[in-house]
Length: 246
Image (cartoon, rainbow, N blue to C red; front, side, top):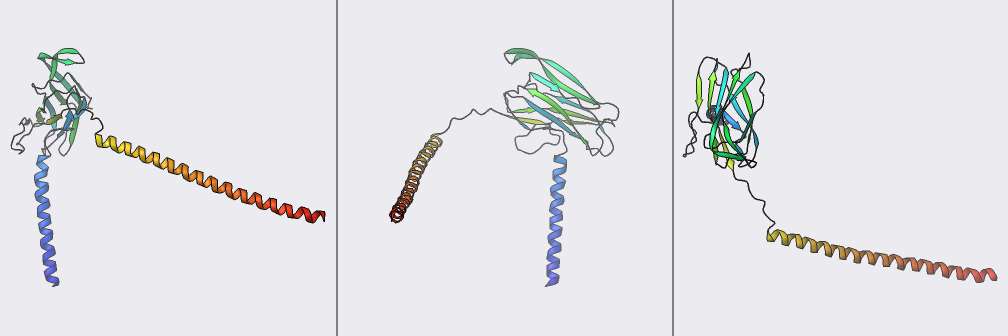
C-alpha cells in the first residue's frame, strides 16, 4: 500500500513538473517582445505610455529602438521623457487633412521616434528598458499599431512589425498594439435607483417619527415619576408638622 502511494505521488510530481515547464516554456517567448504599456486607453484623451524593450540575446545588447507611429492614426501632441544614457530623435510628416487640437489645425504630426544608446547605457542580456512617451489627443480608431525595430550591438535587427491577426493567434514578431475605446457618457440614475432613494427617505421619515414618539413617551414617564416623588415628599411633610405643634 505504501509503495503504491509513493508511486502515485511520484507520478503526480512528474506531471506537475511537466505542466509547469510547458506553461513557462510557452509563456516566456510570448512575453519577451517589445510592448506598449498600458495596452488600453480612451479615444480623445491623453496618456503616458512606455515602450518596454527586453533584450532576448544571450551575448548582444540592445543599442537602438525605432518606433513608427501609424499613418492612419496621427496624434497632435507627442513628447518624450528623458532616458539616462539615451538620445532620442523625432521625425515628423505632413498631415492632410490637418489634425484639430483644441480648436487649432495642425499640419504636422510625429511619424517616428528613434532612441540610441550612448556610452554603457545599452540594454544588456537579461535586462529591459522602458521609453516613456506622452500622447494625445488619441485618435478615434480601435487600435494603434506601432511597428518597431530593435537593433543589437552585433548588428542584428529584429523587426517587430507583424500586425494582429483575425484568428487571435499571436504572430511571430508582433508589433506593439494600443487598444482604444470610446469615452462612455455619464449615465443618469435609473428609475429603480431613484425609487430606492425615495424609499430610503420614507424609511428615514418613519424612523424619525417613531423616535419622536418614543422620546415623548419617555419624557412623560419621567414627568410622572417626578410627580409621584414630589407628592410623597409633600405628604411626609404634612404629617411631621402636626407632630411638631403637639
